[in-house]
Length: 168
Image (cartoon, rainbow, N blue to C red):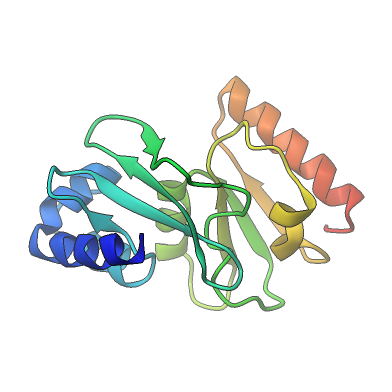
């Protein structure tokens, strides 16, 4: 998968408007560089955004794909047991937990440095586990999911689990 991602990041750099379309971000505002350089996104030859998931050691554990105007789907063999962003170095900053990768990208881009560490679940139905909660333990966590029924239910599930695990 790593070889695929290298080529996909190069492709995204050559076709910045297409990666921005896949991510549903406005064209021409620098999103493509942010997506490829900070988050490691790439673009397939047929126009799918490749969204890598890495564990806390930086090992690639899965890739989600997104076509413009559609939802995500996963490359076979992907395992989404960790939060999106788990590979970024940990620190004592408060955490912002978003519902979805694009929300995390957007939140991180609009958060002043040193304010929050931003993570995401792959969807509102993602169930908290000790492995997925590890980057959030014993710190202040702000949960920011969608305002629909699934988002409210998922947010409540995470708030309850994190509180029981010692987060604030």
